[in-house]
Length: 144
Image (cartoon, rainbow, N blue to C red; front, side, top):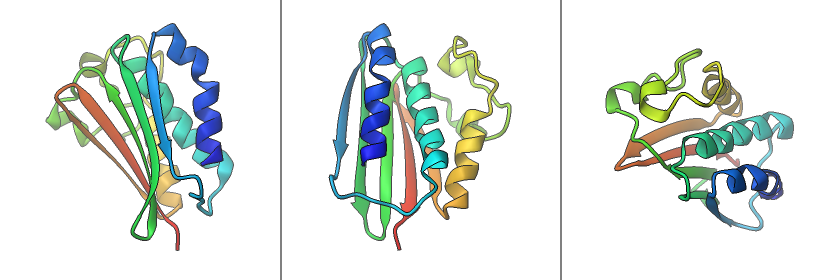
């Protein structure tokens, strides 16, 4: 939880530049055994994407909670919907969704591929859903 809280705090100026609000709901005793540097990279990527692709003035929702035998972290942003046919490719290296989510990110299309690799190294899963101008990334990491 502290890592997530720290990252959200560090993103404060980026949220401010786009007039974004954020809501963070994190269970205070949520802890997972992980490589903190690598997990920070995953969360940084998800937050960075949320900032880049959110509608100006919207709210980014971040949550971390226990769900069965896992920690679940979700990042939800309001922005252009990613077409269903492109969702399956979003975690591929170099794949960019410029037409669906804007072209001002300046990224190379590696962030989500790296995030997926890191999550899978922790025996977890990362998924995405996008509908009605809301995109939700969910990271699930086993705690046992």
